Amino acid sequence: MINLNGEILKKKDASLSVFNRGFAYGDSVFETIRVINGKIMFWEDHYFRLMSSMRIMRMEIPSSFSPEFLEEEISNLIEANELSNSPARIRFAVYREEGGYYTPATRTIGYTISCSKLENAFYLFNEEPYEIELFKDHYINSGILSTIKSNNRAVNVLGSIFAKENDYHNCLILNEKKSVVEALNGNIFLVKGDTIKTPPLSDGALNGIIRKQLKGIIKKLPEFKLEETSISPFELQKADELFITNIAVGIQPVTKYRKKNFSNKTAGHLLSKLNVKARLG
Image 1: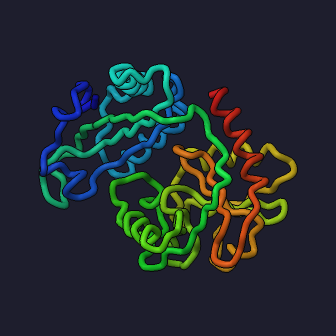
Image 2: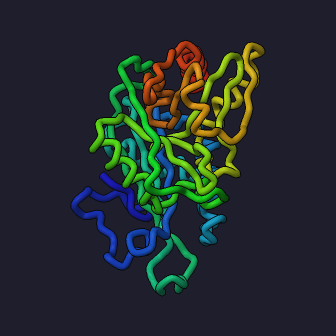
Image 3: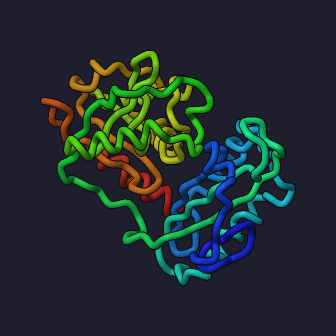
């Protein structure tokens, strides 16, 4: 079942026009959300990021788009898909209504909500081999547009194809200044001694939900120092640990980059604290 503009429909009956601006111009933003037994994880962060993304894209936010209304829309869809007692993954997409070419005919929006079942309620620690490489064919630009989750993901798609063709599990993306910005599907953290680094949003890093949660966790741990700073590719092989974060997997430790093998002690420690925070809401 799919929620299309507030109406819950069977998948075969939920369709969008070929002139939909999300399809035609990437004029769309989205949120990937994790739900545990009907409870939306980190809902406040998702809601405010969605509102911020819509403002950046100069979309007209409906007066009905309160946190309570959108939460109810998600809950109704989960119930319709009989996932109220299961972990689920939600994709909440907002697109500008069709009309116009590059210049929109309107700023009003439509939305779709879809969901799928997840196997595990909370994040599991993955210790399987996970090798990464740099993706250097294309770059993302530093700046505010790169920080939002829009449909303009060409670099991520091409990087994913590159990774698959070369048997890598993931790749790191660079910006136009040749700084490491993020992974293909999440934020990147680097551990060296007692310092944990992650690229700043000003470098073009995605304003990730788990990134934000981990920053809050790390700042409360006296044994670590957090730095939001540009990361050079030359630092990667000198790191003790690298790990990738996103809402789907939580924390994914990197085991190998080129000739360097990494440990995962810090990643495991932080994942346990992230699960505790997720349980508490």
